[in-house]
Image (cartoon, rainbow, N blue to C red):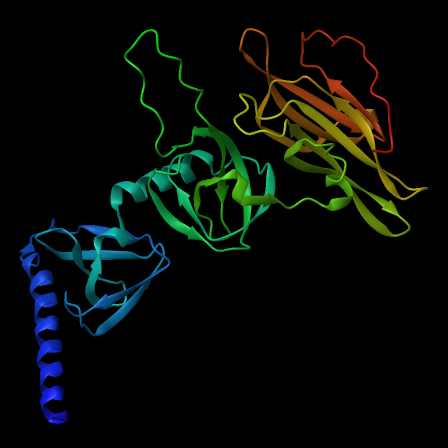
Amino acid sequence: MFSFLRKYWLRKAALSALLLCTIFIAGCNHNSVKPGEAAYVAAAQVTLRDRVAAVFNKTGIVDNGEKVSILERTKNGRFVRVRSARGEEGWVEQRYLADEKVFDRFQSLEQQYGNTPVQARAVTRADLNMHATPGRDSEHLYLLKEGEKLDLLKRATAEKAVKGAAKPATDSNAAPLPPPVLEDWWLVRSSQKHYGWVLARMVDLDIPVDVAQYAEGQRIMADFVLNQVDDNGKQVPQYLLLLNESKEGSPVDFDQIRVFTWNKRPHHYETAYRERNLNGMLPASAGQENFGAEGTLPVFTIHVRDDSGNLTERKYRLKGVMVKRVLAPGEEPPPRSTHRRSKK
């Protein structure tokens, strides 16, 4: 009796395996590929198979971002046979690969923004895909690991796709649809020097808590070290912060700037300068400039839209704990205002 049952289950398992193989093989008539066609691994890691079947042997492993040569495809396009740079060959699912057009889009980001000044540094909250354009449904290629450090270069907004959202009504008397939900995205450079867009809420800015605690409910969008001062042999950085309202989807990148300088007596930061109600747009930058008899001083530059929508540049200098505008030739001085030095 036992022998009969054993043969029955072995026969049933063999038929099931045969059925699975038949399903796979039905789409496995091979299609030709273009000479020199290549693709890039868009998953964290992919196993190469020796055959398109439910049971297979592993012939190699390819990692995220790795370039592979395309050798052939199944007729249904689900599987692709590839060769790695190490000469390993095997089948992978097409969904784990990005084509050369997608790769070129990421390369163009590097060419376009390679010289953009870093606006802030951040750390990822979880594993993330880097996208070619802002938006959850856009193409992705490179994968970021949780805790990876990033350079933030540029901010953008994109409409969030809402499942089950109502379609535009054809009836003129119908109630208007609610406005789209906008999300903030950051163009980032990874530690591997890859460029791409990530969802802003999935990264945390890497800013010292001694300064970040004074955000007063606003979001810190960018930070720059202007210089360092000596406090009993310890070098303490002084900061420029660019801030914005806490909600996402703002039409401007920042609406306020604050300069924090270090008070050596109580040993804490104080606000040396604050300017509000700005229509600020990134990128901003900071550096040093020689002012003749006054010596070399820290400077920073921001970009602001005026009432006509034109983007204008503003430069400032820091001398001691005083921040002043540096006017371009022919530029009118701004209206006089008081920016009090405070302990926060």
